[in-house]
Length: 265
Image 1: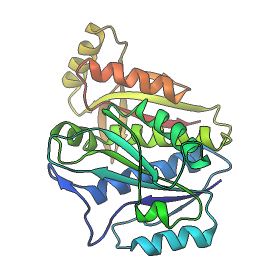
Image 2: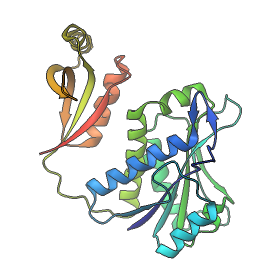
Image 3: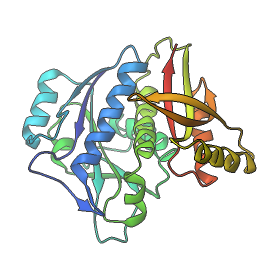
């Protein structure tokens, strides 16, 4: 499956702004994570991106590239903005398409997988006459991953582990929609990390906090840039979905900066 992955805006076009964040940066971060997951975990996904850095590219350049390459799917990553009070996730296909079209079927699958993990209000599946939906010759979807000018949504956007989870939701949708083949990652472990500290006492306090909330945790020493750190691990899983579910439990216990690492043996 040839995916043209388009992080919206970039360079001189910052996109929406709010709460100290630029849409172009959030879009790029999520898109790069999508690319990395697909490249690392699936054998039949070929990804080309409209940009991999903070560069300017016109909408016409993007759709022309996708069309010339012969992409099977066009996925455009965006964030929303309105009046500060609107919030949530929504996605779009072109307004000319019927609900029974192939593109609408892909949207059904993508939407379900993304809203399953993104912790955002579900604003529904929509249609619009956006350039990237109109001028592409393949099925295309544009996702709006929260409102950057809403404090609650922006708080999530600023969290790298949330952006990773959103990327994972997009990949889960792509994998289902296009029957992507997983690589043999039988030696892969997804570890839930609940903090890294240079103070052993702080690490022990975090460990005690988790255990008092019924979550098993232990401390291990890691070397980061030549310095010893005390890392609190709260579980290791061979399945990412199980790791993500446990991560949410850890966050619900008050550890908002917890995240998942992947280790391959």
